[in-house]
Image (cartoon, rainbow, N blue to C red; front, side, top):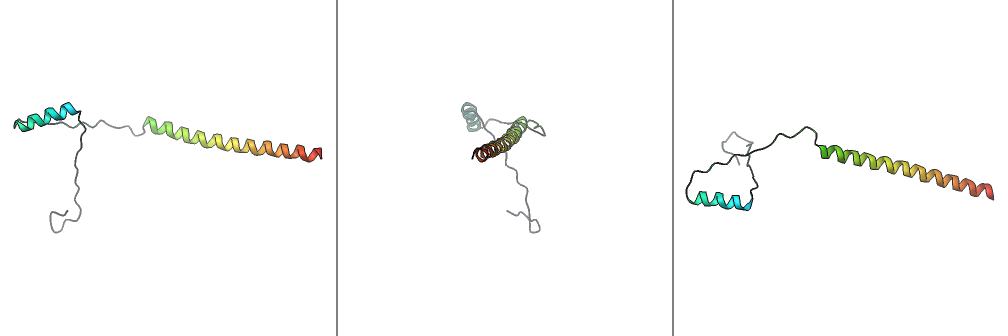
Length: 89
């Protein structure tokens, strides 16, 4: 999609909105009646770090730490059990 000969890249932005069904029906009705319709798009400012991201990161790190400690604990218990078997015989 090039508009001019020397233009290679076009920045196209197509806004998309989600409306409740009754609002969409109302909007279509006004458009069919040739009424003047204006729509204002609202995009709230997003924080740099989302709380959900922090929570998911903590869950991932916690899972890895627990798995590491559990693996080390199991290996230690197995080594102790093996040592007990060697002492008995």
